[in-house]
Length: 62
Image (tube, rainbow, N blue to C red; front, top):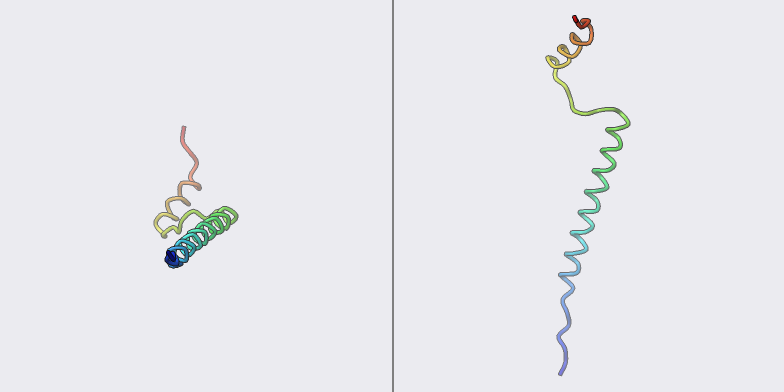
């Protein structure tokens, strides 16, 4: 009795999924490293920048 040849589609799909996940993880690590080196957390709007600037300029009153 001859065996049916196994389909390679599943193997190709699994390889593509793992390659995609690996690429996403690599991009995330690369982006995190770049953000850490530049000390960037999130973009700030003008109102937030002004509040931070005022808070840093005015001395604390005890």
